[in-house]
Length: 144
Image (cartoon, rainbow, N blue to C red; front, side, top):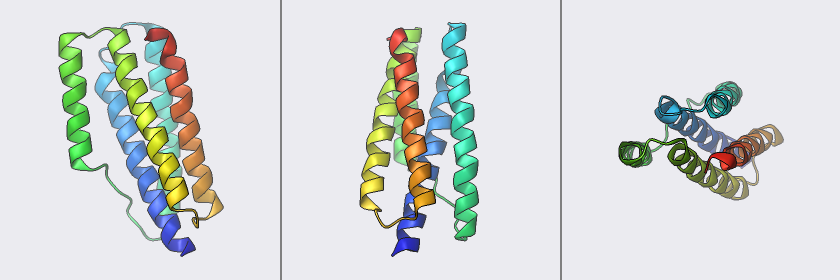
């Protein structure tokens, strides 16, 4: 049970990291404010570092991880591009990213509860991702 829950939690973390990095990449070219650009770039780098940790843990369990669901990626891309086509302000970017962070925190928290038998290293990675998402949302509040 521990190994199963561990792998399932790590897969969800992997999916979340990939979604986070892709979402930041989708909006970064639309950011006008240099400070906001740095916040997003730093967060993307932090997501990528955690993603490397997740991948290493998954390799220990001989698992390849999980891409975000295609429908979720597609819907996110459409929402982002439609909203930015109408209004490409930093406020719109902050709003989109804050919504994404909120969904990430909610999903990862649900998976932490669902896969309670996962090992502590995997739980720690999930908690770290939650903290990154919470911090990014907090950092973007000034741009809403």
